[in-house]
Length: 486
Image (cartoon, rainbow, N blue to C red; front, side, top):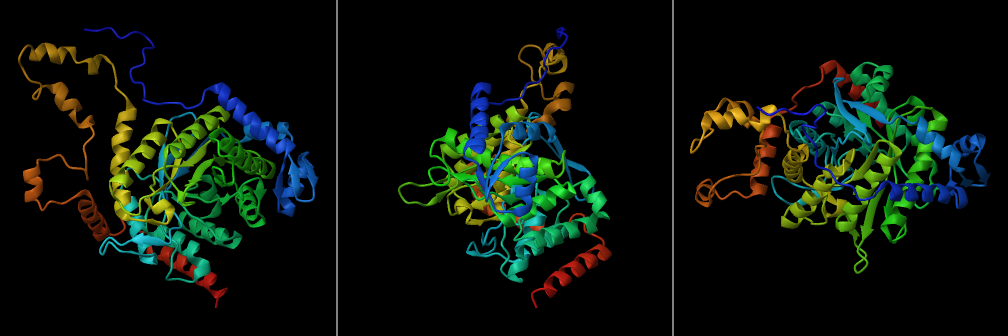
């Protein structure tokens, strides 16, 4: 029998780092210097007052931020955030240093590849319901989103309708987008109605809403309206800094990281000035466009490399964060899409990226498909098993099992095998079969099998439906919102 040493690490996860601590420090300090020396434009009277009162230098819309304020905000912001599901169960444990990686479906797609016809078309309310049902059934898609910009409703309420429909069709936490402050307030009102009040929602938040910076170094009035409201009520809030290499940020990855970090740090500072201790989710999205064609791009080595480096930077800062990984430039779910998505998912999990946005995207975020979600779910499960690593313990060394079987035996009937074989990853959509059996079963490729799985899930309907009286209250809130546009 082996003797395992005291304090021996029995299981070490697989992980990698792009930046060392010294490089992270240089990037963070460069972002501090940019905000102190160059400053940023803040197009919001209330935000500028907060910043000026705290000690920033303000000249018109231009605000220069002293480093000590940013350092203080980093210290007072929570290093851990818990996001719950609709029923109040802990679902996401966000921390830059716990290694947890969660995957979020895409949002705001105008177009969807129809599961029945295969054709690309405008998204509808039914598509959001379908997305909610499919995501609810997929164990490795952790956060729901509608994959839509709904076309068959009052245009100004597309964001609100998405939230309303997701609330009915999934219990998972969800990310939603918004046109303006009124949209956010209506979405929050509906979420509070579902859990029985605003105090309960703030205590156990299950919705993620935020805003985006107008990079480089500009912060719009409508975005800050939304941010400040979320900070005031104390909800976990991301401030999206989506920088484009060579466009809205330097073409070098290091310069891009400085630019994105500087923009999201303004949101962090405002969160702590508004409500010290308010949970904040940092970001630095590395976007690109093809310098030959000027086409927007959502994949490439730099895309993944920038996201992995972002993980290192936020680990250095000890702040929860989000990146965007899990999409493709391919217009359809094909071999290119599978490669793009697989590499990005592996990057996100290996680097320990907290929240990985936009699973299900095709065509550089111009469209999506439910079959792409099925592929992503299967790939995430596969990769998560790799990253779990290998347990080395008295039990798993299995010396007694080896002794019992002896030379030329087999382990099928061993108690050790019965106890542990279910720990192996098992595919649910990928197949392990011969060509002959595959042909006899109808020569179904992955996309065909994924379409069948989507249909099976949709036929089951909501797994945990809301009570009729709750749905009636949500409909009443929507009817009130509709009145503004009659």
